[in-house]
Image (cartoon, rainbow, N blue to C red; front, side, top):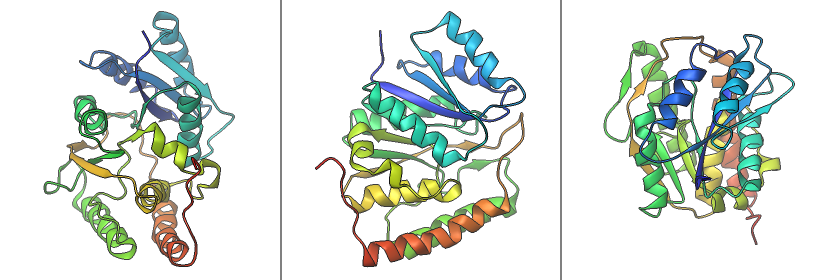
Length: 247
């Protein structure tokens, strides 16, 4: 039976994690379907997923792309696929267990039961809930979110979070082809656009755990895009309009 919700997992060289994260999601109390967006991982991540699809074709799906095209474009491809397949709730999640599978259900419930249009798995809504990050990275992330909040006026404490549940009406209202940023700033742009369009955002406390297996995809250019991208988003909100696509 098809679920009302799908978890989108972008992958690039995640062979150490992908099978474990898929099985962890399949064992949750709520039935989530899973969509992997793989950017032609040279380590064979896609082949692992395809072997699992033969066992559970009704729950697991994959979109294979030609190369490493950016996190934002991977999620946009996933959003479009999810809308075409009539899912009501669409969730972003990392493959590396930095987002704990057990936090998925509260994130889903915030939209499906509590009425939020968009729920954010927040590291900072109840203190600083980050495990095994170097202190410098914790401070950078925390103050990056504070910077975004101050510049944009968006009432979200974890503005850069990548663990997010969308009601389909949010994604239908956003011009997905017009989303500009591909890296770290993508997460900010999506939340800010939803906020400017009047959607209700709820933060759900989670514990974020640094990856144990595989290699982080973070780099300094991602932070640079976010820093200047926030200013660009604010200027757009002052001099432009955020138009809903569903009207």
